[in-house]
Length: 342
Image 1 (tube, helix red, strand yellow):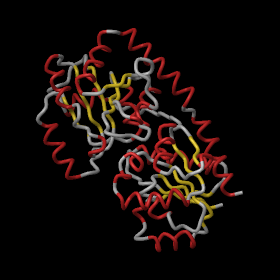
Image 2 (cartoon, rainbow, N blue to C red; image 1 turned 180 degrees about the vertical axis):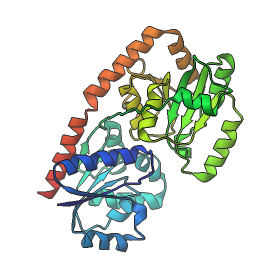
Image 3 (cartoon, helix red, strand yellow; image 1 turned 180 degrees about the horizontal axis):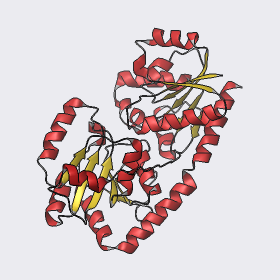
Image 4 (cartoon, rainbow, N blue to C red; image 1 turned 90 degrees about the vertical axis):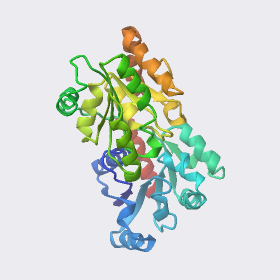
C-alpha cells in the first residue's frame, strides 16, 4: 500500500529526523512510503494530481499549517502530526488558523508528542473527540561520529581554544522562534570571568534576514561561537563532547535535541516554556531557567557540584529510556496507520 509522508525537509531539523524515523518504521513492515515536502507542490490541484497518479491510499502530514494547507481538502484519509510552531505560534494568524482548523477537523487521526500539545489542541479545537488525538512520544536514537568539537574550535577559533574548555552548546536552526541570541551576552560575560567557558551555537540559517543580524551580534561577542550546521552524527558528537546542552527557544513542540542530549548523558539547561517542561523536571533530569542570568547560575552550579551533575544526568538517562523508547514509538505509529487503512 502506498503511503505519502509530508513534512518540511529542512536539513538538520527535528521535523526531518522525526518524519524519517516514521518512514523507516512503516517501510520495515512493507508499506511503500514516499517522503516529500509541501514546497514540492505549486498548489492543491498539483498535490491532488500527484496523489491520484501515485495511487496514494494514506497521507501522514507533519505540521497543521505547512502540511495542512495541502491536506485540508484531500480526498484521501490522512493523519496529521502536530509539530509545535503550528499550535504555539501560527494559530495567532487568522488565515493560518483557518487552514489549520479545516485540516485538523478533516483528519482521520491527530498525533501529538506530549500531553501539553494534546491540551493545546483541545483548547484550540474543543469540538475534536478526545479519542481522535493520540499521544506518541518522540523516540530517541543517537549515533555520534568521530567529529571533534575541540578540534573544530582549535582550527577555526584558536583565540578561545583551551585544553580545559567547558563547552555549552545549543543546536537548532537560526530563526526568530529559536531565539539563539537570547543568552549570548550573558555567556560572553561568563567567558570574561571564566575563560574556559565557551558557548557554541550550531545550526543552519533558515531566515536570511535574521541570520545577518545574528552573525553581526555573534562576531562582536568573545567566547560565543557559531557553527553553521553539522550533519546529524557530527551534531550528536558535538553534544556528547559538551559540558551542557542549552535550549533557549521562545516555543517548542518537543525539542528532539534535548532528548538526544539526555541520551548522550549531557546535562540539559532549558528555557521555561511549555514544550520544554513537558520533558524536563527541574533538578531531577535537567534544569529550567526563566531568564538569562538564571541560565548562567545553573551552568556555574554544575561547574562546582559534580554530584549534582552526575545525579541529573542519571535521572535524564532513566527518563529517556522509560518514556522515549524507539520500540514504543514504532509500535504506536504502526498501530495508528493500521487503524486508518482497515
